Image (cartoon, rainbow, N blue to C red; front, side, top):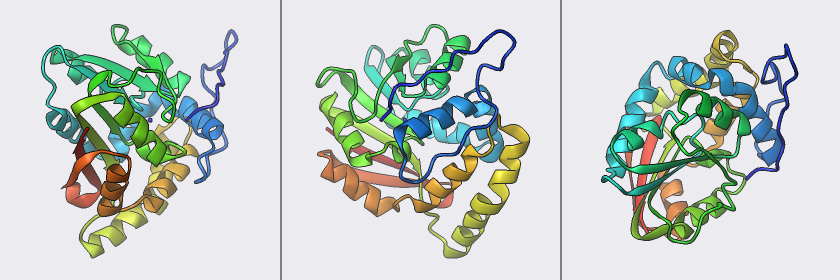
Length: 249
């Protein structure tokens, strides 16, 4: 999944989201990031599936298994977007709260998954009580929070003692030749592919840059510990393209 409030009110005959929007910069001004995600919401899930070559489905399964929700547990899915990552928790009998700062994402999510309790929320000021959740997870959203450390501290605040954190985020491939190929894909191939399938391809230039600039596995584990989480650890997925970080409150 730190916003400033802004919504779009489509008129009759107009597309519900802007076709083009100025991409966000790496300073991650919340209003820019929100507009960007509002703009990609309509085709977000399809675009992710294409750009990841279908790997996003495997990554979601890994997140679900890492959280290991029990029936009746309360799970916060932060930066949930359209709720694709949230639905498996509900199907397993957990009480999942999909939370995102993009109203465009939430609107699309409500259209497709009306039974999920979508909630608008700022990643650095979550609208939940202390120790409200048994588990908190965030997939591919932590790097978009304006202050990731503040976001991790907020996740810690709303998680009960002994509760779990699972962060799934793009990371650094462990094999150097593969990392070179991967960066080339991000910066050269990803934007043209996005132009073919996304409702706002310029946004994927920012996303590629934010992935390249994101800390490696150990640095993120250190950040998780600094935020007050215990025993941070990680496991690489897809050769380190993605890392699954876990910790305990």
